[in-house]
Length: 470
Ligand code: ADP
Ligand code: LRH
Image 1 (cartoon, helix red, strand yellow):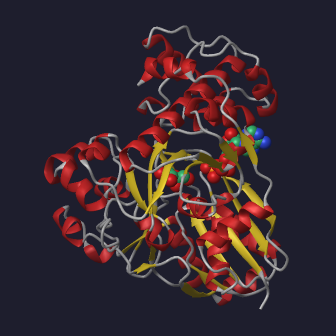
Image 2: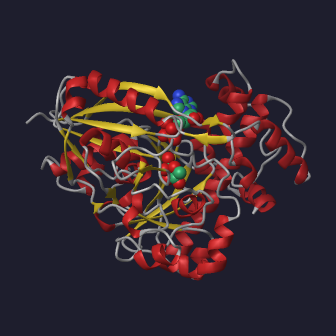
Image 3: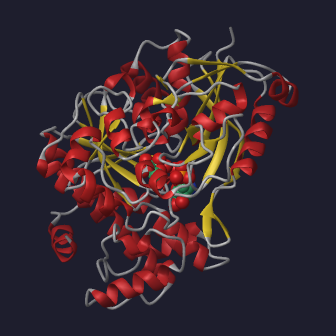
């Protein structure tokens, strides 16, 4: 058996097909990377799912033969299949506004406390539960979350991987099975939800036509198919006293726990209890993340991220900060204009240059990180000695230092491709090459360059800035 494994990892800003080789330590190579983002069609935001699938096939072709393939992607979004297994329409992007008013309706009928008690999920307007209620389901036979849809196209097998199913709002957080009474109460058809599968479980071989197209065949395995669950599984922590920030388009900030926290305080702070590998709970909150920066860059054609970050380092500290989680920042659009409006609304002078905007975004994000990490510790009682910051954001030195300063804790940054590592290492474990999550994490820690940022200063300036916002 070869010791090569392929990961298909679809992030909201880019997708990639990566190959990990475990014959001598852990080496990762990129077979193919491609952009991803929302496409507005007739007023509705979609994903270009067939375009993504074409790139996945190109990537697998470039990767060459492997022992197995795993697929992970962003959470909550889905495709609907009809009775014959055909896709009904293009999956809608979670930044679309079709669920406006739905969370409030569901809270009014089912009760917000009951919902949290059942699913343990934070309320985000795009949770699958709300999207399904805003969707047309009359022709729908099966709902497949994005990695499960790709897995279906690759193998012909239907299923719902459990870490991602935990982001739907329709999974029972205690039993980790579909919450059928809730599903029925909402008037959703229980048959829509396929059987659950666990990370490491085999899906089946590649379909014959897929194998013919890419030039080789291999089994496909379920991994922790929620990208954040894969990232957390690969956090290079050596013990339990850590917080993590999976920082890409979103910052997912929290702690890993053996069981859920379902207290009223936890619900009030909108903390989520999403499923991790091996029965763990990813107790975290979504912070708006580098989306803020991505959308600023889109508004400044020709700008260079490296140059802007260097210039932002020289800008005046705390000239203006915003709450990164203001709902106004969620949809695509002119981000600098929205930040300026938010500054004015809160009595601050808007930034005067792109570098000043970048400074504002990074300080605001670090303040969001600070609040989420502190609340995760307080609400769960988990002691934290270090914050592991993984994902593309770990390449942003200014953000890592600000996060250390704001949290008053050391930040260990990297790997940028934590999600991919989690994906391939769950496959390697299923193949018997790795014993468990502790060994997975140790392998990442020993094979990847990590950078440690110590908190500088007393933290008073960060506390003052935080008090302006929260
Ligand atoms: P996602 O998986 O959500 O698509 P990633 O984890 O790939 O996101 O992170 C993408 C983000 O990482 C980019 O938007 C960018 O802000 C940041 N990033 C990537 N490379 C660099 C770099 N060299 N320097 C600074 N930031 C970077
Ligand atoms: C990050 C992520 C996050 C979800 C969001 C929709 O890519 O999966 O965990 O909340 O996308």
